[in-house]
Length: 169
Image 1 (tube, rainbow, N blue to C red):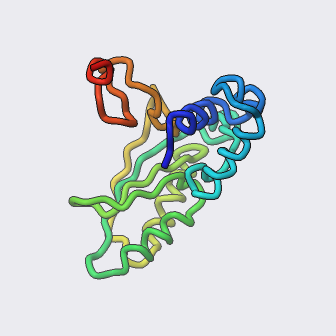
Image 2 (image 1 turned 90 degrees about the horizontal axis):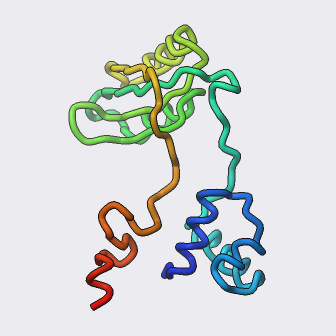
């Protein structure tokens, strides 16, 4: 079970993955060795899946973001199509969806010509019926961080599902 201290550790790591163990220990009021053991346990459980550098896409040549809906033929192995779509370079996210379309993909490309090549690769995958793509003009928010802390706007405590006022009673 993940307790309040684990949630605080996770929040700190989401915000800044390079925070030192000593700084995390100070923030949660524990010994560094105890914090390290908690972090290792969270990794073993798979709660922490890894650490990565977050790059600014434009600075490394991937200025274009697009979202592509993919409709697949019914009866074709949906996980096989999803796996094939996921292997196309430039695909950052693959989501199997309910509704008219089978998948929603987040794609990064260098430019529109590069996006065209990626879309052609999608079309070459057996079972892909058609695609619809929306090109992003401006990104206002992009994050992989989960909202672990209290929601200040509503007063909810995400972990327990109670409001701050209810928890005072």
